[in-house]
Amino acid sequence: MLPIRLKQLPNFLNDQLERRQILKQRKQTKRVFHLCFFSCESYFDYLYCSVYSLVKCLPKFEYKVYVFSDTDMPLTEDQTIKLIQLCPGLEVIPWPKSMGWGAQQIANIWKAYCYAAKDAAEEDIIARVDSDVFFVNDRIFRLVERHDADLIGDGHFVDFKYSQGGCYFFKASAVRKIIQLIEEEGIDELVADLDVDVEDVAATAFARRLKLKVFLTWFMGFPNELDNNKWFIGWLKYKFSCLHFVMKNKDKMLTAYIKHFDDCKDEKFTELLNSSKELT
Picture (cartoon, rainbow, N blue to C red):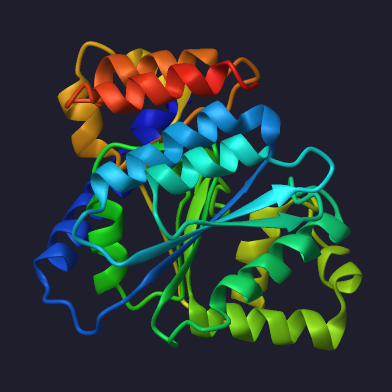
């Protein structure tokens, strides 16, 4: 049996070719990115670092950041102030638990996407970003703003069965179509046939149900890929646009980002990150 890396090699090479062709294209329309985080008080350090990585990587893009704060464990006032200082215009919204498991939480997530899309143009992008996703370059954003797909996500970690949930991008027009589908058929009915009733599986299933264009690519690295490439960080930055620390102990995530990816060694960031730890 071939190792998974060898199995996916043809897919990876084709993906690199398609990505290169798309990135050469001129932007057809100006797209604003509406970035949705679902977080809580105990995840603040990771959230802060994730938003920092966005601010650092996206100086050439127009974007809006929404943090949907879990009402069971909301961000504190001090944490909210620090996030707004880091990213002026960031909006923190109290929101029901939306970790992504079960029909009700999936419904809460789609209500949040609807909120983010309320003033968005049809071609704008609504994106999910987990608190444990750190960006290392803007390549995926340049790809998304040029691509015509309705849903763009990373599929390599789940054998391209669906878009893994750490980060994915929907056109605002596609979000509105899926919201209408949920309203017409009900969330319980829509998730009943899923193998696992979890948010990322559901998002891809909804898109395919409506025959929207889905593009699954490579842009999100996972802990084992960071470990395997820790001596080749330049290659990691070329291969991926962000890292997703899907692990129970996420302390290594802060260490890895500061050590390998905070190229400017920003003193303000280090100071604020250290002070944020005193609050949690």
